[in-house]
Amino acid sequence: MDKPRPKPGQPLVGRQSVPARPLTQGERDGLIDVLRKAGSGGCVEGTSHFRMRAAQRGFTMPDALNVLKRGQIVSGPEFCAEFCNWKFSVEFEHDNGELTIVAAVCASDAGKIWSDHVMLVTGFVR
Image (cartoon, rainbow, N blue to C red; front, side):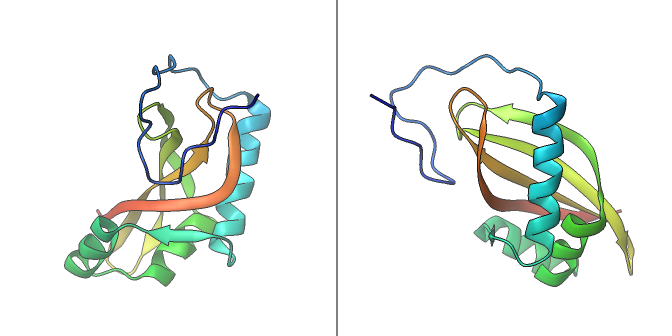
């Protein structure tokens, strides 16, 4: 019987953490496809922390979507066993400098990407 999938944004309960492993090239390409789709109207959700930081730091959700659509991954993806997702940072030009968006894509507890859902965690302008 298959294990139930964790809910996006919720930590694992009662499961062992899996060791971090790098994404395969195919999975990395799939992650980039998820980012581009999210930036073009796909399934994207901003956490309350993301919304607070956006207001404080002077960027908007459309700015963040533009970063997902056109930006480059500058760190990660790094597997987070607690939340069962791949976390990464994407950067692109913004009016006030470079806007970096930290986001996550849902994965199984073994690290396989299983959703097109992108969770925006935070962002900052450099």
